[in-house]
Image 1: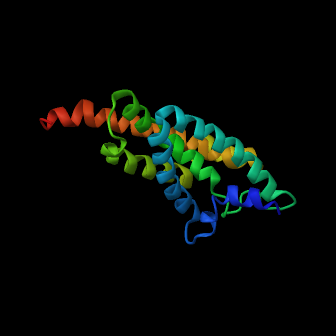
Image 2: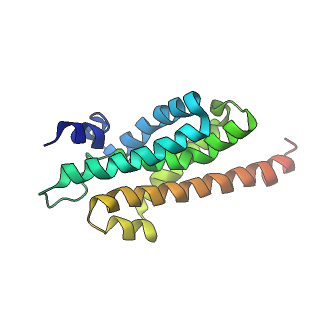
Length: 170
């Protein structure tokens, strides 16, 4: 097995943590996203999404060649890509408005929880992508779950800042 592909797909071995390796992969994405955002703002995190997606397809393909299991649980690079996407609205808001991204901590919790919810339940197009049975499907289902989570983060932020906070006098 290609050792670089294994290290990439398992995010340095995080995918071997039990139980719930996907959740561990999503948790590992949080400090990585913070680092990308801190080093280069929203643009660098967006580049990291694309790079992670491309590397993830390659690494997943390498790890699953000749195997009947197209999506072994130790492959968590897909969770990292999806979690990065779920965090993009926070990164953009922080970058565009000069806000410390850690001040947006409720959004981090929402992004993590929503991403895990959509990744685990796989509604609609997420499930269809997962059933592709190839490396692109492994990555794509988490990308779509990340997009769903990002939309959820935007909706929750709008509800809080546009409706609830004004009603509560904040």
